[in-house]
Image (cartoon, rainbow, N blue to C red; front, side, top):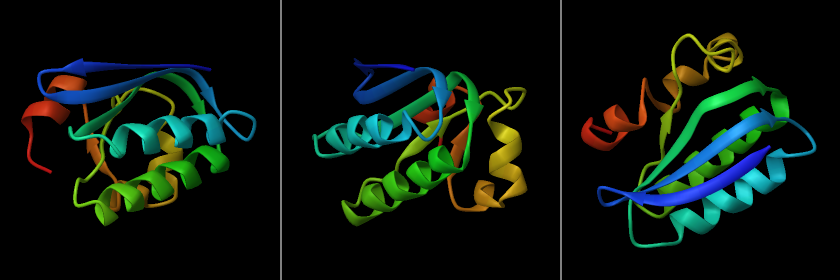
Length: 111
């Protein structure tokens, strides 16, 4: 898994590529938490993730809660055709997470 962050139109976009699973989920959580501690809204871009397991789902819930505690909801970009959507839907987390079809939608859309 690779993680990179960049400022895009007044938001920090944390772009993730690869697999989010037991061995990588902690790194993802740390990267998103660091971004949330900044002054800009955060978008987590999962459009290049091709696998998401239960550890990854737990991390998404944890960083979403962290964003809520800070008063800045986390926006998650995930292409609806990607394999990461299925575990999110199976667990019902689509009702809990702020999901968007693209980074652009996450930046411009309502929370």
